[in-house]
Amino acid sequence: MSTASLPSTQLGVFGGKLQSLPVPAPGPGEVLVQNVAVASNPKDWKYPEWQNDRSYVEGNDIAGFVAAVGPGVTEYKGGERIAAFTKMATKESKYGAYAQYSITPASTTFPLPDSTSFEEAATLPLAVLTAAIGLFVDLGLPEPPAPGAAPLPSASQLHSQTYYD
Image 1: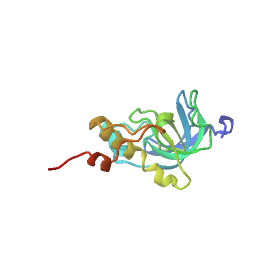
Image 2: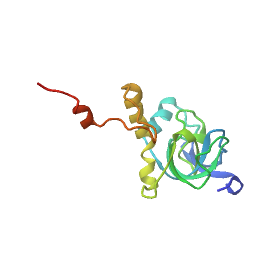
Image 3: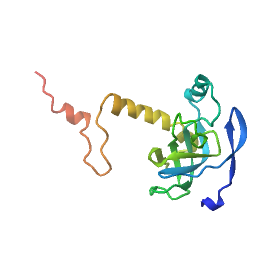
Image 4: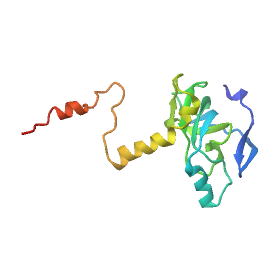
């Protein structure tokens, strides 16, 4: 979808009510997604409740189609099936999931195979990123190799080097 064919307004949940909002434009390194499915997490109601602030569109787990890309985004052109995790805790409505369109960093956007439904995909971003932070940042496990790099040794390969008396 070219930006010329994008609507100027969209429906989104703002201030706890369905309202008409502008469709945001992606900035550098960002992707505009036409949402098909979004997920809801406990933090989506807790954060606004604890902050006593509902002046923005909440939610961060999205799945849909790439509607437009910002400058510097080369991995997507438009029309691709994707899922993504938008920027969290910004209080900027353009990053909220509970709208027809959302902005997300290209770095937290991933392609979807046809075998994965949008509903299934929308449940992945926060859960997968939480697990990755726990494993690779907090626990310091080695990151998976890049595509084309030598694979990490398997558990059986590691155990084959262990000797017992």
